[in-house]
Image (cartoon, rainbow, N blue to C red; front, side, top):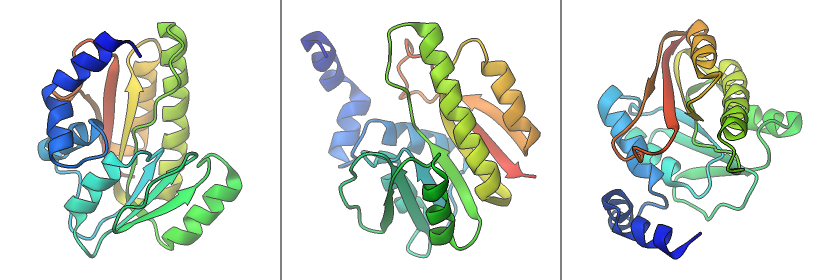
Length: 199
């Protein structure tokens, strides 16, 4: 990362807001804005956070669902412990990891969410395709893990394949749409697909 990027980031008001509120990532502000807009979280929800490290999204979920709710975070990498968040290390696409995750859940989830992004190659078409692949994997898991009426949230990059992906998400839910919170950089291709009312 170049010095200019680091300097810009440190002057970014959403980055500063995340730091001030002790969130582990700037993306926590994005999730907070999405929840404020659509009312994703409810008291007592069971939430699965895919690709959860460093934990910003898990922090927001934990705050919003209250002491009776549960957050299960899954990631390939390490994850510093968070109060009230259960962590499972592994690739959520691995059948053994999924089996352990379903065992831990014990019941269908209320929300499955993913802020995963591919390692950027610098080639937009490649990055979009990889992002959509991750989105498809998260959707496939979410369809299996969610209760009827449950909600799904996933980050993807806009580009070729996005309209088709949105249609596939919509097939399994009462409503689905793309949202770009104000904390997302205007230059970024990222978009958040939110779907409610698992059929």
